[in-house]
Image 1 (cartoon, rainbow, N blue to C red):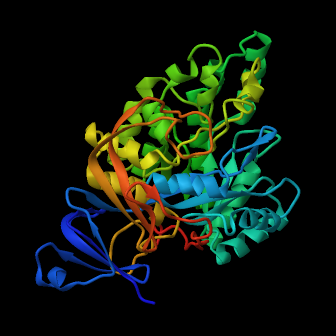
Image 2 (cartoon, rainbow, N blue to C red):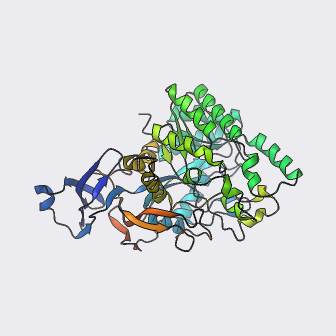
Image 3 (tube, rainbow, N blue to C red):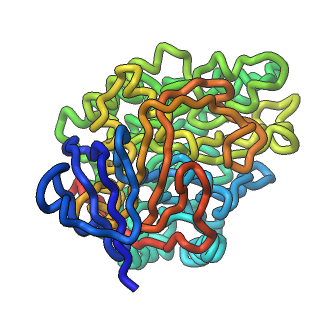
Length: 467
């Protein structure tokens, strides 16, 4: 049964252009666009017509950094693939790229299979995977080649968390050399974890146990040092590099310097670094625990460098690093010892709205909003133009967005499976109205009409900025 949907009357906004056009969808894909009032548009008929007058028609968001059900610090991230992808849809995101985790001493395949099983039949929107390498050795290096062939084309390494995810410089170099040969992209958590552990131990010995000390020991200079080191190792290996969750001005400077040399070095930041700060970590009592994530929130003055990096394209992508833990019973594991607070924030539902607020506030343009939230992550991780744009042949992942509606972000109204909002009480201009995933309405006029299992696993090509 062929179904046709027509979205008419809206302003279509992509990374490349803004045009008043009608959009015709057929069998889950964009069939055609036609400028409003043209003969072509007037002749179209459809089974379902969506009126987008006074609204934007934008590609569904691509969140390239989420952690559903991630085991961390003796507990698990509170969003399952079912609850997390439903919340993503509410926020206008139609594709997530989550992280499968290799267990130390086991194969990449066993870790990947575990994540396939977690997500299968659960997701409301389409999904893909990166692979976290916890244990780099001859066997896992060979497995990287097989995963790239299977559509898992990016691999995350950690310079932080000794004893958990940490890789030393030799392991990092070997993985980078492998990715240089097989076309994969190394994603780096760039913080000097060995030095940070010393500072954590010293802070606890001094009795500095409150959440705010999490930010004080994970120093911006140690993020910058690790970013610099990762870039040099990538140069030695002849490999591209993508640095995740960049939070510090000094780290942005390292990326900028590398890109000024023409190196294939890329950077991502997250809404929490653009809108929150160490002021949140220092909230009274134990409230600051809600904002413990790594890299940590920085003093407010770092935000200007992040916004500038997004405008100059020294940072290409805004992802969420969505990794929620409930305040009650999970974040509370770190009462009396900040180092035991599970690291992570909820945000998959808020990203598109917060970045639209950045358009309203004058930090970025409308087209740049779509670039950093949809098109660039799709290109970076081999999903474009199937995802990330509105063009004939693309998947019909489309959001009708009301730029004039206002909302107040709150745990009372969000759909993430977590008992607090990192943006509680923040007033936002702009709101998702209707969301189509491959042509099917998942959110229809602010009502959830999707279902677990609609979302399909999507294998990826290699990074499209390197072709």
